[in-house]
Length: 141
Image 1 (tube, rainbow, N blue to C red):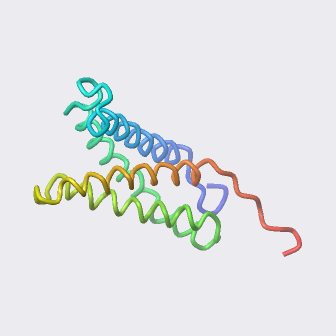
Image 2: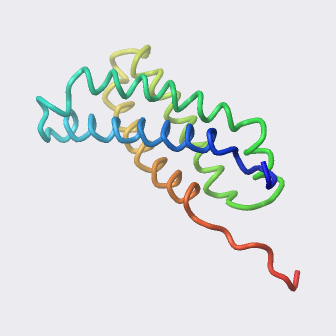
């Protein structure tokens, strides 16, 4: 690591590919199941299972950055809003995902809505956080 909080290449790719795979499979299932677009292809159990496996890998990927990247980002005071936003929406996604699998049937309908709305917001903040360049400190500071 050459900079404080900068992830090694393998870790950055693991996080990006893990999050993108989870997000894309979730979006595909959302389009097929919730919005009835090509339901017989996009809304299948196979897509949902792939999303679940991708979510497990994405959770591992985020876990790999918790000790160093998040601590360094907090200290550097850069990208705080997108970082905190991601952590918040990830917590909502993890809890709602667990409730979808293990929760009572009575809550399923509104938990599904919370899960996909949080997922869409999360992927937006993830892309902004991962790919938006920050400018260095102002030389006059």
